[in-house]
Image (cartoon, rainbow, N blue to C red; front, side, top):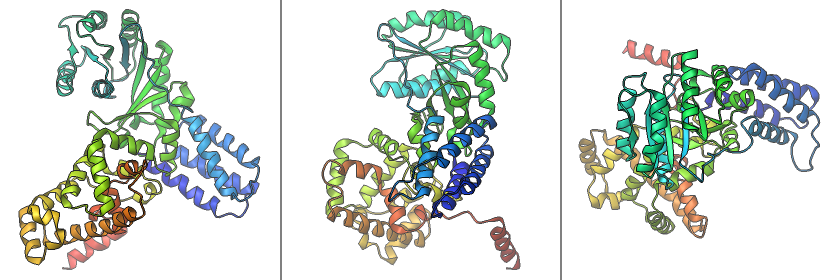
Length: 479
């Protein structure tokens, strides 16, 4: 996410950081480029102009700190203002202590409300809550069945009522929550292809009947600054308490995320990236600003790792890494855990300094399966002792995995290079003590493999330019 604006801003920063001193002309030129970057990212033009004006004033009036380059201070100003633009502080759910907390989801059709309901339910179940999903969308024929399927997959009860109106369904769900001893009620309301009076009247009636503690506007991030207009219309009729941005993995620009809070005053509470039901996270303005500027987000990376990595396994892995005994069986296990953490490009973008290097890189999560197939084609002895794999064994393993011997050789080479890195880290004590587990979780073997090999992850390659592709095609034709 945010690849477009990250690249543009980093280009501005490279220019500014190269200046020994910043003059008024330098700052004004930089701010023109920042404004262009924001507009190209589909940020609302009023938001972009106000942001640039604030940063420009602060940059021109900044005091020089001995030992700190003016360019670094400029980057710090942009970061601080970006955090403010995104909301300043994380805005969590206001849980009701005296009764089940009612969370009402609203938004246009196709924004992802039903899937978001399931994602929130699963997230809160992991936190020890007992949510009840309420199928209040009687307009879309498949909505009720979709919610039933999602509820079955995550083990959450789903309240439905055939033939009843959305208002009655939501009102009656309060009694159903008592039967299920639920402490959270998630109302999946209907959407429309556009905002109309009938939709808003129905939603307002649902609000009155169910008295929700939270009314969350669910918005497709890909619609960019149009999200602002839609959110403002919903806010005009409903007291929105927050927003959920969906399909963030498909949004390379970031216009919705950067415009929504500033334009509407509605805080972003969650962002969803991907179709999996665990692909949702709380929105933290400081972490998101860091990602946008290409500085990574180690805190979120560690949090994701902690959700999938067993504490005992992590400690055992610490010891193996410290002794440099990490083998291909451990590698296979780690790959499975990495896959549970989310999309590969998203994960690597959280590692500081690595995000900007991923531009144009073809990171195919399907290559995980290729690696797993190669390792699974090995004998137990070969997995534990990779150095035993000679030319004959490589050919046998390749046949079993449906790959070429050179693929097996490349994997083994990268694995050995990774072991050298982890061995040095172990000797330096980087996997011991209180910080050892976090280092292990944040620097997963998959990421270490990329960094140690000094090449793109798992043999992935940079996508060629159009000119390079044409040249390659011409060579093929000549053959």
